Length: 391
Length: 107
Ligand code: HEM
Ligand code: FES
Image (tube, rainbow over all chains, first blue to last red; front, side):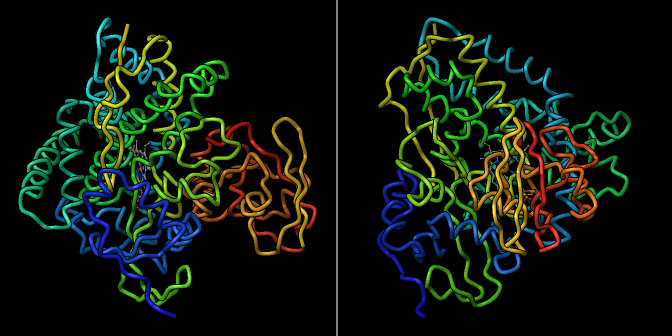
């Protein structure tokens, strides 16, 4: 058996602008490919990405040598395996269950959504990405996490700084300087709020972790909060923007979604079509084989769930946004032990509250000009603007 | 082969034949049984494979795995004494004929 073929033609700029035509080609020509520009072995078929994430012993998340560590100033749960990972994951889980979200927090989220939607100006073109998707995602997350004292701007800036730092594979100084500043600010806030969240437990993630019977160490509580800030704002924001684009660009489907109250399905299709987290990395712990190629221990494989979500083996017309698919077994929330801890939160807030409310308040909203919508991103992806005419 | 019957929330029944060693979740997925999602692939991280073991099989299906109780808290539908994560029920010849009921929703 030979090593996976190596590619020196694909560029990061191409992947950032529009990776989908490339992934489509790779799925048919070389689903296991060492891409020089990325420095990783890219896996683009659904069966491969799933097999890798489902086998944490062979494909470890534990890779302390990534820029994630300086960016978060911590070794976080996302980069741990086994019992250590489980302990930190179990600590935050009770704050993110569907029951918690629906019964305890549902009314608050409705109120927040109402507030942010009703302040949108009518009678002109509004960039919903900036005016709604980002700030509302930030506000909701601030409450879930137990840090509502942080402003929308702070939450969004911290999130971006963490993400940029974690993706700083070139180890340039500026992104780490920005994530250091963000860490200082987050640490100060968490320190200030700790006694309050202990004195008056409120079911938020911070409070739940602090008041657990056997709490994980404070440093790890902070690290998990930061992972949730880094992973809990841009993704629901991008999922919402993508869903809005998909529905507004396909009025026939939108009408059917309204008729059937199929907002949950529309949300699932949006994240399948353009997965907000497009790729993940895993460290190979033993010599192995994937798709007929030799994969040596020490290699880093990249599961391209964005591509898995359009795999011809699972989907007909996977390149298209189509809400009413018979089955939609997408991998946008990942799978295996690191399956997204916030999946229920995202599904309920975006799919069950925000989407229906927005179309209820603005039944005639339409895309100002489809061509003006820009998409960007290799690691994380979504529209970066969404000009919509509101009346 | 081991037979498993899934009873949907609306009462519809589907019986499939599974390999011993497979989980009740995997058997559902590989036979296109609707109503079990199993999004995390059996890592006990998603609770989208929730089922209720039929009364007659309560003992036979075994006890909950370590950590299963906690994760069941994350199930979307009501959790009862017979609730299990179907990814944690491994099929064996003794479970031939097993019946599980599916919840109203998994997400
Ligand atoms: C549509 C929205 C979202 C998408 C598409 C998404 C996607 C993902 C994916 C793919 C992973 C797995 C990464 C890996 O395998 O290495 C992940 C992990 C994670 N997500 Fe999300 N996410 C979303 C929203 C959220 C929200 C709202 C929160 C917080 C409340 C959150 C918190 C987390 C955490 C804590 C992890 C780490 C889990 C672990 O390592 O065990 N996510 N997410
Ligand atoms: S498949 Fe995720 S908990 Fe069973």
